[in-house]
Length: 157
Image (cartoon, rainbow, N blue to C red; front, side, top):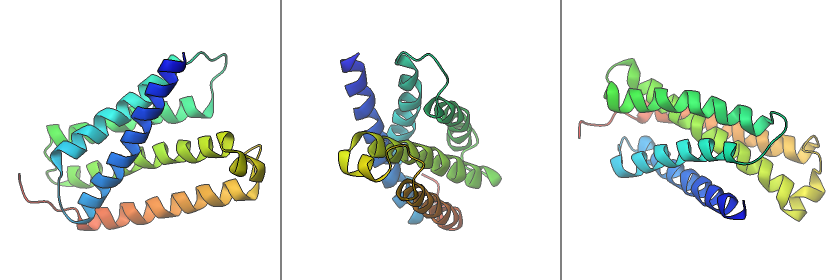
């Protein structure tokens, strides 16, 4: 199980890093096809591999993974199936950014759970420091989503 955890964490971190690269491309009206494919694959794998760990009850991380696995096929279809034509461009941007937001939400949750200095600030994730961190994360992604939807009008590649 330790190997699966390490692989899951590596895939998750690669997905988050590549997601920010893709969003950066969106903000500059660039498609970045290889980075985008890498982001989408690693983000799907992140959500899917989260179910490989034993659990006895449904956790918030499982719900977020299910949401991600619903959102990601829409993003993939908008990009590859509909080629970003018409409203599919905005659909792709919004779903990709929501998928990235969910990844970062879980990253923040895990950081407060596993890193001693953060855990000391919010041991149950119901304390103000955790709420502030997640609130800032949400506001940042709302802003990124708005800006990317406005700016991502890539030329055909």
